[in-house]
Image 1 (cartoon, one colour):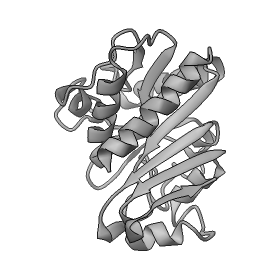
Image 2 (spheres, rainbow, N blue to C red):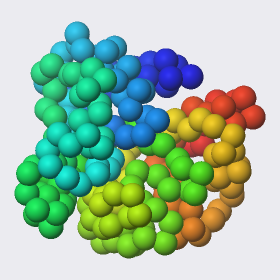
Image 3 (cartoon, rainbow, N blue to C red):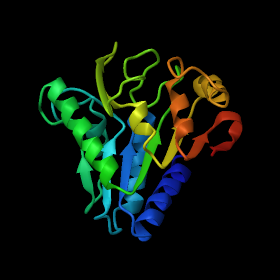
Length: 217
């Protein structure tokens, strides 16, 4: 499933680049890291000067800390020569880091003509770093920072997700099946933030739920 997801994403990016568009690609953490790395392996020999890459969410801390989504991507071999890379962590304090990420998102979402994101979905219904009931759900900004039980997070918000042209979900595991089933019905976004992904014009899901690849468009 990882290989199929990675090939699908890489082909989507290459199709847009070959048509002359500039592309902004959001990579996720968690179980999606392996998919992101596989995408980079497919793309690494292509011409990528019109590709920009950033994260859907990050765990705040010093640049390169062991729990950083970006660092975990790099450690597993994520590399896209020629592309513009926009990591979240800058070495600044939390407030400044979030402000800089918000500014970068505003710049790139405005500049790039095609926006595509890789997302996971948690058993609790979260996506990116947008946890149920958190302030990130209804934030008017593109990036939001808050403390969670495990990590201090900086995440894109539903407002940013609504700017995308295409979203790909990679979700695997029986513990997520109930949530994936509920995603096909209308739920309160405060209870199931992943509902926001249904606002993206093209949404494709790769999942082992009922052993199907599901497409919601």
